Image (cartoon, rainbow, N blue to C red; front, side, top):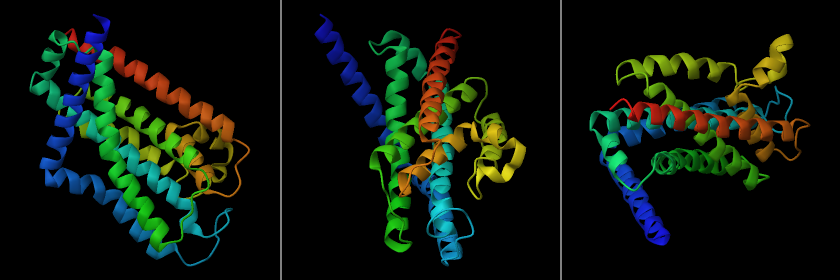
Amino acid sequence: MEIANIKYWARDAYNLIYLDLLQFFRSKLIVISSLLTSVTMVLAFGLGADNGQPIVPIEGNYFAFILPGILAVGIMFSSTYTMGYTFIVDCQRRTIEDIVLSPLSYVGFIVSRIIGMSLKCSLQFLLVLMISMLFFNATIESYVLLFFAFFTECITFAALGIIVASFTNEISFSSLINIIIIPLSYFGGVFFPLDNFGSFSNVVSALPLAAHIEVFRDAMAATSSTDLYFNLLLTTFYSLTSIWVAMYVFKFRIQRF
């Protein structure tokens, strides 16, 4: 009986992921918009900053410094908006009511949605990496760290999208989420080192985006920073804590139907 339940769970999860991706690719504007931000940033900064002038403390040039931030910001925006609006659409279409009656649990629903969102987010992530490596001589020293940072950040900000979407609608969601993620973009160490914040550097370095950017930098640098293990623990903590809160909020949201 338990094996049968697992099969039903896996089948429902697969169908949900398939329909999620199908709905995503049917909307050409959503696909283009999800790719446009990061691709535009990597092209603009690559062409404008790839001049061989090391104006930041990293081997190479300024583009080598900001590329991890471009990757992280792209993931953050894509994860929060994709997951948040997907959750809002699920509520409007009464899809969540069907979850209560299906073999798929709350956890299964969240996991399925995050897997689908990560697959969609990987499109812009891999595209930006390819452009950077082909045209701007970007290098990757640790693929393990690279994809660890990718998946933990996807989980962290997808969970944030669920949490915010649980208390908003399609109109107010973007306004509230921008209040959170836009400051993170500027205070996450994307454009200059965290040490430039002076006495606030310790606080800024603990922000979710900043921690993930530092892991991305370690993945793409020849030498690891002294704070690598701290950042690995911090990113793991953010991903686990955020997904736990998202599941709690999601369950609370379902009980309101």
